[in-house]
Image (cartoon, rainbow, N blue to C red):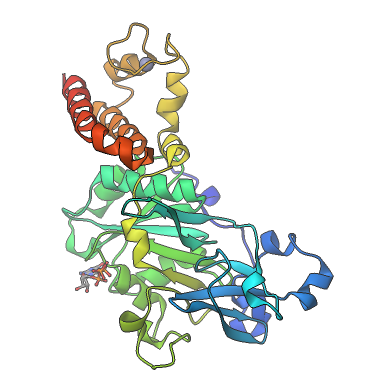
Amino acid sequence: MTRDYSHFLPPAGDGDTTPSARSGLAALGWQPFFAQQIGIEDLTKTPPVRVVEVHRNGLHILGDGVDQLVPPGPAATVGDWLLLDKDQPTESAVLHRKSLFKRRAPGTDRRLQLIAANVDTAFIVTSCNQDFNLARLERYVALAFEAEVTPVIILTKSDLCDDPSSFEQAASTLSERVLALSINALGPEPRTKLREWCKPGQTIAFLGSSGVGKSTLVNALMQDQRVETAPIRQEDGRGRHTTTRRQLYFLPNGCAILDTPGMREIQLADVQKGIADVFDDLAALAENCRFNDCMHQTEPGCAIQLAVKNGDIPQDRLRRWTKLVAEERFNATSLVRRKSEGKALRKTIRALQKRNQK
Ligand SMILES: Nc1nc2c(ncn2[C@@H]2O[C@H](COP(=O)(O)OP(=O)(O)OP(=O)(O)O)[C@@H](O)[C@H]2O)c(=O)[nH]1
Ligand SMILES: [Zn+2]
């Protein structure tokens, strides 16, 4: 069966336009979604600018003829669009976001931290080797769905593997809505295989464990310019690796890459919707369970257990779902409750897993 992947791709745009032919804003990732939020007069009075870097002492913004630092004030993160208030920059309004990665701060108050805004595509990177782990991929995909970002699974090191298609196949069982493709990140493949998502005006991000090839992919996309040649640098002139934590930089063709280590630390807090999206087949089945509060364990009339029994749903998949849901609930609870629930949760997960294994 040939799958139709066209709906995975971003809308066809002016992909062949060279950066120089695009207006300053378009080259920064300005899209109709943002344009429709403002009036013509706003464009001159409060010009749109994009946050390309978050510093301790403010936000580095770029716009049409704008390149400056806004002191801390706007509740914004890298990737955000602001309407720049020239007189009082700290009062600049933040435009509604197309997407947002966020996480709960570690520590006692567990505040919500904004990680990255307005990413169009999240490349979830793993390799055709022992790094491949469906449960981990599911987490990343749930995070992307929650953030309203399109996930694409990239399986690197296809050149070191006898049968990359088996990895592709395994990854595509994860969700009907996610495309998985294997790639040799060292060769020319990144530029051809990822082209659809890396068009000018698009913003992409890479997620995945250490060593899976994220930097290699970025460098392949950068062509001759290394990552270090990113146009935005701090005054001390050192490269991004030593000085910055969250940064948006641009491929030669004008596609923006959002690079933030914070993404790797995102936990599964507040991602009910994302999990439901990854497991939408199970959620749909659950509608047919006899009891509204069915836990899909031993209840009579459980549609999910029936599907597992009939071989329609792999037992493993049900187990991963149960675990993710439990973990998400756990992360979403307050710290005070967390402490007492920690033990109980581990017990519950163990009990559920045991039962599911039967
Ligand atoms: N043969 C082969 N090697 C690869 C491929 N992708 C990455 N590598 C190698 O794997 C190693 C790790 O790649 P990186 O790009 O540094 O991995 P990363 O995900 O950026 O790792 P962190 O920076 O630690 O997060 C490097 O030695 C790469 O050359 C691939 O597709 N094929
Ligand atoms: Zn059930």
